[in-house]
Image 1 (cartoon, helix red, strand yellow):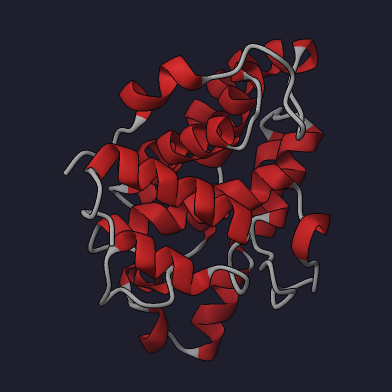
Image 2: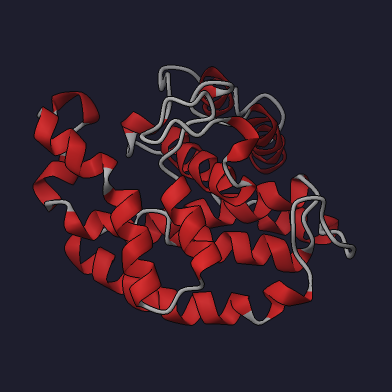
Length: 223
């Protein structure tokens, strides 16, 4: 099973500007976020080994979904770099808590995990990550149905944040990790993602990722 759909989508990246962002403004931001974010990923990996692999895999799916949704190449690359930082706030959560399934965490532990997006945004801002990207990290806590910590719903959540959250759910659906990120892990990855569409995840982003899964895993293998 391949977790890298990029070989199938690189040739599909549009040259024009996306409906949801991109262009020359992002051109200089991509290397900036990549270089400054690398230190944060190093710290998270040291705190909770395996985090880098998760971040890299999720960012791959974020890039693919961004392309599928019509973002420019530059916009998709910036979304990919931002997605790597989606979970950097977990460096403030004890590793023992992160290792527990969501259902077994105490109320206090669950609250710590819930705050990690806010803390991650603050950490990234202090590391010199642009404020706009930090806002995407912070808004990664919000659910499409408005059930997140601040009650932000639907398209009021930045598209990049919606993509990042769904990309991590895709990784969870394809691995034994992150069982709290998808609604039903007993089904195939695409079906598991569809089970969260309209609730945790943006249905349009889920559809894009389902297309990516079908392309990378082969017809019928993702359901």
